[in-house]
Image (cartoon, rainbow, N blue to C red; front, side, top):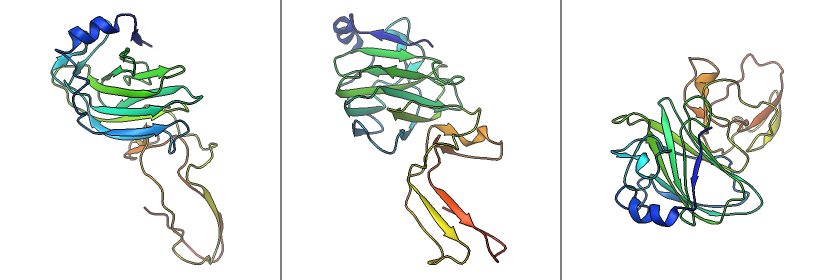
Length: 227
């Protein structure tokens, strides 16, 4: 894991880095306010990686090509949890994060495969500005940014955690149940590539199930589940 913390040199880097990454600029893809214990966890948002500025302008340890303005900002109220920020893409991406006190963090392949991951122990409350870079200049790729207090399972290999509690609950249904259809509201998305289960699967899913249905079969031939 190639994570680099630039805390002791933050003042000098902020002065010189203004020509590269402008953390005062409005984030291109928006921002979010997250309090410790937030749900759903992970919080995810879709972003396009890449830019025209080398992340090495911040430090020689940083990799990839990033935009001038932050891609996303996380305003975080800390509690007793660690904080993990990761990116998942089919392309080779990198991460650059500017913390509340001007600390710089960067990573290349700290997650699964070519996915970057920054793990913060005892994170401070405040704003975390995030850039998702592309390792290769000129590569702009669809990427899922994930923020978690529970840790992130990324990438396209392995299966989701079927033993984890369903994030949005469960229900017991017996054949002939009413009302039919049974409906429930959930939030889609996650940091795991569904293609890790099968090449015919598409999209990005959470590690834990979104919902569980305990079904007692009867005289019906089919059970349909849709979204």
